[in-house]
Amino acid sequence: MRLGKIFENAEVKLSEKLENVEISDICYDSRLVTKGSLFVAIKGFKSDGHAYIGKALDMGAVIVVGEEDRCEENYVRVPSSRRFLATASASFFNNSAEKMKIVGITGTNGKTTTSYLIKQILELKGHKCGLIGTNQILVGDEAIDSERTTPESRELHELFDKMYKSGAEYVVMEVSSHSLELDRVYGIKFEVGVLSNLTQDHLDFHETMDNYAAAKAKLFKMSKNAAINVDDDYSHIMQKDAKNLLTYSIDKASDFKAEDILLRERGVTFNVTYKGEVRQLRLGIPGRFSVYNALAAASAALCMGFSMEDVEKGLVIARGVKGRLEVVPTITPYTVIIDYAHTPDGLENVIRAVRGFAKGRVITLFGCGGDRDNTKRPIMGAIAQRLSDEVIVTSDNPRGEDPKVIMEHIVAGMEKGNYVCIENRREAIGYALDIAKEGDVIILAGKGHETYQIFKDETIHFDEREVVKEHLSKSAE
Image: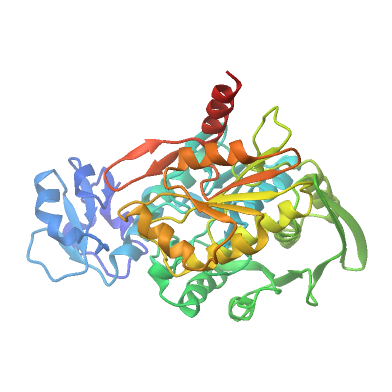
């Protein structure tokens, strides 16, 4: 593609000398540069792309873009490398995002389930829909593993292009606070922006809840319509720049409020009133937070012009998402549930949901990720102990931290009593299975859909479904 085309929406004007230079690819990792590439130097948290400009040129880059003053030939300085990468990637991949309706969901918890519910509603009406999120990426019939909630802008626009070419009319995507703060989604025009909730997470990056909220609020400046949970304490921040706002709630007054809620083991039922019309909605996923997820999905669909009948039909046939209140098939007299809960609010939600249908004890197993917000660890310990009958503190993804230190942080929020510490997660799961009795429910929290465990020097295969099956098979021998 001609460089002049790439710079169409850039914040700087390209010299005539470079207008007709052809590029074959856009890269921000010097290791991926090939002959004819445009290399964008980005200042990261661990390394600075400007230090690799020489390497990129040696690898065949024909043009380099960065934020610093440099003397290399064919170097262009821009105010923001990240924003340039976003606009350049959009141009390089045919501005495909503009040819589809994109739904963006932000919040601490509920993004993944809500995205699947919206996708279900859209597809039931015959619309082809791509999906980008924590669990996976779906392009037509192709499923791609997801490395992060929201990809970097270059990969994101490549996905949009693939989705459009596969026939997608809509894209439903989770929009992380990191992606908003780091301009991964810069320039995208969202058809609807959705807020699920905002509770403590990622303070290792944002430092304060106000900063975290400000990052999330950026989505609503970029959205044509907004669906916002007004029960959330930070919703007023999101509403400041929201356009064509539809509010939803359980507790406070809103445009779309759930009433007469009935929580059951196999799902939730509730009534909603919208524009004078009362409907009963049903969702086959248990827990009060499932009501919020259903409200978020329904509100997004209504913002896009779908009817309450469309919403009702889509929700009633929807089922759970892998790693979200996922029941592991066993022949035991007790139940094993896997859930991605890795925040204080998420952990409380899943334990309370299980409490609503457990006939016996609730046994909660969890840990906390390393190199992440450590202030939430004692809070999660306190929540698990207060709401569970038995707690097993173990390792999650320790990354570069000592698992024992992470566990000590968790236990700091707990009192002596109903908990044990077992560092090895496989052994911890075995212990939970061994102590479970008829009617008990074991919650394996934190890993969810993940099938790996990340340590300082290695990442190992670790699928909790397989671990449960293997332990039960050995116990039966």
